[in-house]
Image (tube, rainbow, N blue to C red; front, side):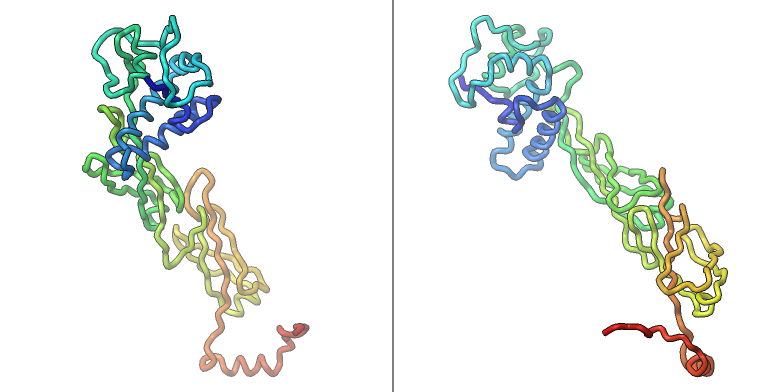
Amino acid sequence: MEFRDYYQILGVARSASQDEIKKAYRRLARKYHPDVSGEPDAEARFKEINEANEVLGDAQRRASYDQLGPGWRSGQEFRPPPGWAGGPAGPGGAPDFDGFSDFFESLFGQRAGRARPRSGFRPRGPDRSAVAEITLEQALKGTEVTLNASNGQSRRVRIPPGAHNGTRMRVRGQGEAGPASGTSGDLLLEIRVRPDPRYRLEGRDLHRDVPITPWEAALGATIEAPTPQGMVNLKIPPDSRSGRIMRLKGRGLPGKTPGDLLLRLMIEVPPADEARQWYEDMARNSSFRPREGLQP
């Protein structure tokens, strides 16, 4: 009978924490699940990954396994040491680990004939990923999207207000089915907000250009400005230049810390056929020299 190095199978160090072991198991289970993997040895790898997790994922079994010492290598001829007590085997009953190796049986099946799973434990299926595209309006107000569940049925998932590009949601029990009637994994849903012709989204902040006239920029004014919540009065300070940013706090996407709306003032000049006389008077009488002092 060959020794099995469960740490090597999961790709973790012998000093790995239980959390590191759990993460390694989930990553490998996703990769080698027979229903989704393209690996030629997926089924065999999936079985040995589950077997390794049954030992290292249980603190008592792991402690018993570690008593064998670190000197063994996978593939070496192995027999349990004399007087081996084995790991915690459950009460008698029907076996639950069909397909596990003789090595596992020799270590953890001696006292009860066959090892049984931890109380209440069912192997968990891999998580799966999906992307949901929503509009800016839906990001502002929240929405529901229809997703195809792993069992072929559709499911409505609520996306709360304030979801933005890169927001990730975990939908419990909508991943891949677990082996041996185990629990399903989760669905990891990534949110993407479609580009909007009016606003540019950065995190929870919204950006938009607002045109103003030269006299509004020079003299100052109060104008009506657009926001996702409707038009508001915006005070333009005198001597405002094109490109000046006016920040409206809390007018972006909602959230625990709401985003802001950043309005960029863009000076628009009247067409020459409408304001020619005015332009000519300014050209003759104004001392304004915007290029004075420019260096080559």
